[in-house]
Image 1 (cartoon, one colour):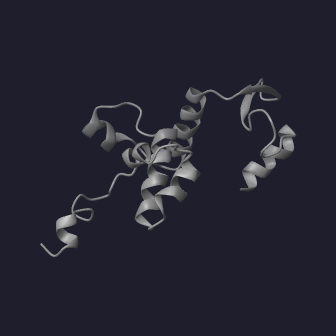
Image 2: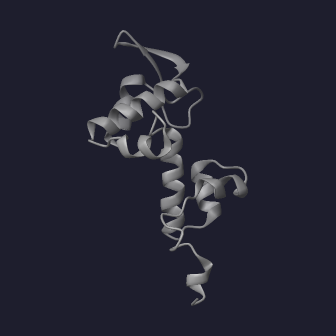
Image 3: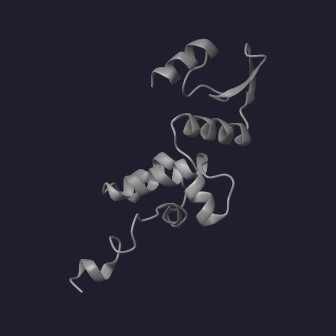
Length: 124
């Protein structure tokens, strides 16, 4: 949260104010009024994951994809973790900004099909 507070101070922005919360920065100094692009967000997330030692080798070997982490995967991970913690779908949808619960359901990915199996839950 400290990084967001620092950004708000540096950019002179407020949460809930009109306009983008995060925007482009030119020449490491000029903060633009245009929103940051989705591609820039993906690059930032991938750089931070790499700096944290999270690699995509296993992911790319299994799925054949170069891009192994993104804003989308963070959203899906949050939805999955919140569902596993027993939070209500309505609460999760408000946080992830899903308008439809069937759309949210596609984001919730059980860590194990066995753990999510109805057969196990009824003693079979």
